[in-house]
Each structure stands twice: as C-alpha cells, then as structure tokens.
Image (cartoon, rainbow, N blue to C red; front, side):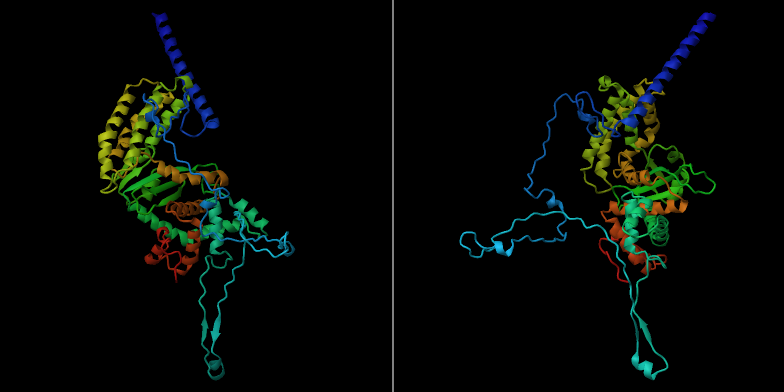
Length: 514
C-alpha cells in the first residue's frame, strides 16, 4: 500500500510538472511572438487566408466566396498626385522663354509668336521662418488743449492682451511648440535643437514654462467645460495607460503613474476626448472624474470597474479583449494544427458576432438605435449563447493560454452581454484604445514627464488636441485661435465667452471680435 501511495504521489507530481512545463513553453512562445512577431491580430493560415477581426466567419465556409474587385481609374499622365492637393494652394509661376535672338524664324528670319505652353507642376515646400511681430499702439493728444487748457486729454489705441504677460511668446509660437510635441511627438529638447539651428536660442525650459502657463490660464477652463459636458453624456468609453513622472513628492522616479482617458461614443453630437493624470490605477480616480455621470461606460476587464463605480453607471465589457486572448492562444499552436484548434474555433465564433455588427452599423440611428437593439437580440444573442456554451464544454488546462482565455470570457460574461442592452453601445472599447494611442506613441519619444504639473498640462493639451482631431479641426489653427482670443475674454467668469472658445464653435467663428 505504501508503494502504491508513493507511486500515486509521483504520478501526481509528474503531471503537475508536465502542466508547469507546458505553461512555461507557452509563455516562451508568446514572449517571442510579442518581441519578434507582428503586433497585428491577423494570423496567416496554411492556405494564405487571414484570421482577421471581421472575416473569421468566412474562413470555414464550404462554398467559395466571390471576390470583389475594385474599379481602377487611370490617372492623367504627368499629374500623378497633384489632383489630391488643396485647390486653394498659391501658385508661383516660373516662365521659361527663349532669348530674344532665338525668336526669329530659322527659315525666313521673321519674328515668331508664342503658340502655346508646356506646363509642369511641382510641389514646393517653404520652410517655416520666424519673424518679430511688433505691436505699436498710437497715443493721441489735443494740440489746442495743450496751448489753451490746463488739462490735455490723451487717447490710446487699444492693444490686444498678450498670451503670456511679460513674455515674447506669440499665440502661433506656442501653438507650434504644442503641436510639434503632442501631435508629431517631437520632444522639447529636439525642438530646442531645431530652434537653435534657425539661430533662435529658445531653451526647452522656456518652452515648457510657456506650455504650462497657457494650459493653466487659458486651456484649463475649456477642459473643465468639456468635462462637464462629458458627464452629461449617456454613453462613454474609458481606458488608462502608464506614464512615468520623475519628480513626484514621496515617490521614487521609477514609480508607475497613469494617464486616464475618457471619451464620448458614437451617439455624441460633439466628440470629446479627455485625458487625466493620476498617480494610481485605482478606479476611485474614474469615480471622481465621472462624478455625476449616469449611463453606460465601456471599459476593459479591470476588476475595479465592476465593484467600485456607483450603481448609476452600467459597465459594458470589451469583446476585443476577449478575442485578443484567444488570438494569443492561437499564436502558440503549431501552424499545421491551427485551423482545427479550439482557439481558432473561438475566433471564428467571435468573428460571426463581429460580422453582424458590420451589418448593424447600416441600420437607422433614430430612437436610440432601436433597430440595432432588436437586431442584436434576434441575431447576436443566439451566437453569444452558443459561444458561452462552447466555453463551458472545453477542458483546457486552467493555466494554459487557452484556459486563461476561456476563464476570462466566463468571468466577464455579465459585462460582455451588456452590449445587448442599448443600440448606442459598441461591441468593444476600441474607440478609447484608438484615442489613447497618440499618447502612447508620443510617450515612446519623450519617455516621461518631469513634474506632476507637467503631466497635468500634458493631459490638458492632449485632450484639446485629440478633441480637435475628432471634430476635424486643425489643432494648430484652434490653439492659435484660443491663445489669440482668450486673453481678451473673461473666460474665468463668463460662460458665454467660454462657450465661444469651445472647439465645435471654432468652425463657425474662427475669429472673435473683442
């Protein structure tokens, strides 16, 4: 009996080691895929088909699908690309003529006339240049009173207030610096080098001080107004990502801080994208930021969203996160076995759900997308039920990639199914992930923020710029507009003046007469 017990113990230990070894091999394969493989979630199968986000439903259909061939339009010879340029670009004409002695006919010697022109268009780029903008306000006095009166009236022409008092910064200069960093991802130290090459000794410290100052004085009120309007929406998206702040009281430089993102959904009249800097990832940050909001909130699977938000907020899960875990599980399956693997089966089923969403986008959008709600209940609900029944039937090891993907979906089912509640809801949180991507790309260039004030200013500037982009507004034009007009308006105390500066009012009124 003792031998049998020892044998059983060894067999159990051996099975445990096998599972551990399998898990380690999976992690190694995933690590190699993340480091050296493509980041796209599309995977090549043996037959060259792609297991993409919206085409999985067709991969295993028996009947071949007809291919749609887009029409091809031949471009005019010699005009390749010029037709796509703005029509209002200024045209500079360079005329090439024959010397006067060559304008005589080589046969009869008589003068020749111009019978036509051969034209070639080129796109010329004029590098940016700096100029000094000098404001001169004239002062007037009365000559007659100077001679005959003890009081001389003096009148002064009005001069617009500067964007920063006591500074030589112009609205356009600050807007340019902000767009270079927060749109193009160009750190201030590299901008400093560029200014120096132009012969202008502008330090990164000066540029940083300018950005922080205009954010606190002129952009923060606009940010606060957009936050108030965001809270009045009924459907929002949220996400967060890491940011490093070097000089934060009581915390080492290596500490992780977070940039939170909140944005409107597809039903919003005006799109709003807001970033907020916080030193932690606690969902209490979201609860404070969304104070007063009542409605649906698209999020990822962070546990805090599910138990730390008020009952007035209904959390909606992200099906893209569910699919992503099966995609990772598929990457570690040998290519020869991928098509018939459980991970491929899961992705196929999720692809059918996504395929329906493509159709539902064409449905009428009145009455809170009522048609989409009914279509989801009739067509998506059965597919969702079948998918979770399939998950319950699987016997994958809990710690394997497939087992973790299944466990994630089962644990998130309650929130994933919330997409069926309202037609304005989206099947995933990709809208927030797309909006947070510009910050992630910029972070790869500037790496960190020096102080919390800098991080908060960055959050406001990113918010203004991304909101402009979402509303098809040129960020440079809008920032120049704000910095030029806000100092001459009482934006701190006058809501009407502040409303005139909001991004969605910029198109109708690019300039404000003070």
